[in-house]
Length: 106
Image 1 (cartoon, rainbow, N blue to C red):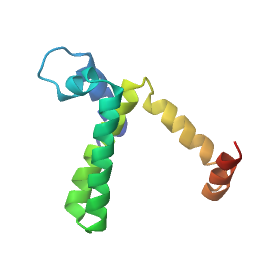
Image 2: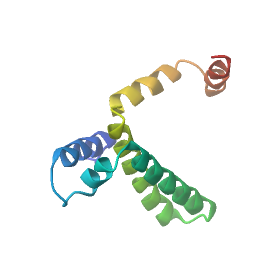
Image 3: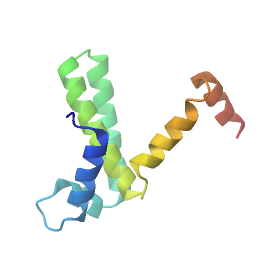
Image 4: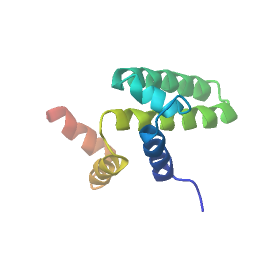
């Protein structure tokens, strides 16, 4: 069975609930959502650099870091992966161009 983003979210939940200094996830959450957002931004930049440099292995690794830090940030703000999936699901009822145009008018 393949490892999924839901598996990662469950791991983040479990490690976030754990105490002590052994968990990097717990340390991130203890520093607050703003710190989690900063770490996510750093990983986003590193992912972009790997893509621009056409470094496939690094792009895969940085993408994994990016997804991890995104899920930690969502947890820090009390947003679940299911809520994000629901938003994505709503967007599939129209083309991406239509959806983007509708957000501009809001």
